[in-house]
Length: 233
Image (cartoon, rainbow, N blue to C red):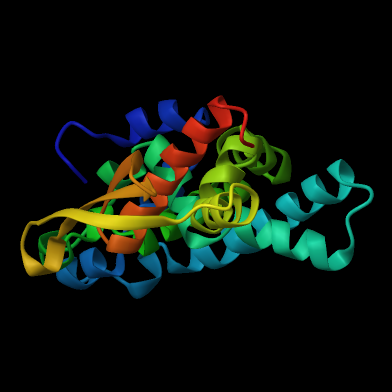
């Protein structure tokens, strides 16, 4: 956990006060921290993540089922998968700055774990599990609706940005496009990539990420917003 980031501050961010504050602390505790501190393995977030994953699947499934009466089972499954996949949860976690609250071991901290999608997405699910245990299904549903299922149109655009951009430019606009690596910086274990995307000779957007793929996704999202503003979507 970074200095000046407290459990009380996290409770304010998520809009929920815990009766049992140890659940929230467990939800943001990585196994590398419990190993270094020689705590019991069950004190890390992994069991809460398991529970939170199940709660999230149920709430998101019911949300889609009620909202999309004409969707087939296959379409519902695909939509749910895009909403609760690792990059999607990581995006929601970053809106909360959840990474700043994670308790990490020194080794994991040094290799950039705080910014890794897999970790912040797991912690997001663990927080859901903690809220469910502390306050029940309705409290968990409120959190999920507010921080994961809100602004779904723009989030859906982000989740599938690379494939959506390719379909739009090559399929509808009948033009060529390409990504360009602008910059690669940082140590080998914690690199930062900066990428641009172009439609023929026109720059549509740039993006940054800890992986080239993540940077391309962000660039594609900005390109889609630009093209949507032009009425292309």
